[in-house]
Length: 440
Image (tube, helix red, strand yellow):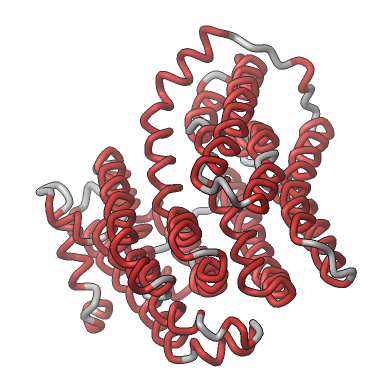
């Protein structure tokens, strides 16, 4: 923190009660990230070693496939609902009830679509159908994240963290127990569905204990139309992001089979574990950057230092993980996963562009350019799909890793060069690869 403050990226002086509450709330969110990343990697590796690459690939295909339908459940209402709850607190019960009804309807529709789609693309894979059918229940229970939006509006994420991590830790323990009793694959899918269901249950209990009453919620058709009218651009953006992040595993399954998905998933579990770092840093320094937008010298100076910090951090992580990829895979997984090492050595470099993309968010917010980020995300998703179609048949999991790195690079960095409004950011991102820039 002191290091960030000295470089003008973090301002902690004059911390009032409101800011103190926000910092405490952010702290709880970071605890959530650390618990899920740390324990998730530990138990996930344990599960991977038990299942073996092929069955681990089957499970990860089903998880990735279901993730593609998540946006149809959330309906892009997260941020919109939080904003409306802040601006119209008197309508809280109506907004929460209407949102829950919309998301439940979207979840039920998504269940039907996911099962029908997997039967269409994998007509002879009974195991995939069973796993997707079990995990599709996630899409219904995720509707209760409506309560999470309420807690966000009240700056009470502590309750959400307790509720979801209690469910996470409970079912992490259940997955370890399943390994000990040598349970079949479908039970692990059921444990992931159970985690989401119990997370919804604990959220509901937390809401009740905090004084809320779900039975007081009400549904308004007019409110539903207003919410959907605002959320449709976010729905498309969310779909693009999900395709961007999860289509690799689905395409690998269809083109190369479960083994390729298992090796790719083992590699991405390690390379993506670092993605919480840019979010944590940017959420801390964004206020100081946005506050300086009326002073161009200070504003651009802080942005430049943020980009440099992100590039240096991501390159250090990339270099260490790439050089030690064989040792990391050999230590974490069984010898049957040795093919994941070169995939990890390539895929980890996507973190450089992920870090730079997240660091751009203060600029997008201060310049009101969020619509351009939607276009960049769509372009990245399309490029990823096209490259996967060409590279996966030739290089299997390695082809998917290359496609990911290239598509992230284009959407997070090089696409900025195409618009006059984002070209200054592109030049700052390019200059961040010169280490001396950080110190001047």
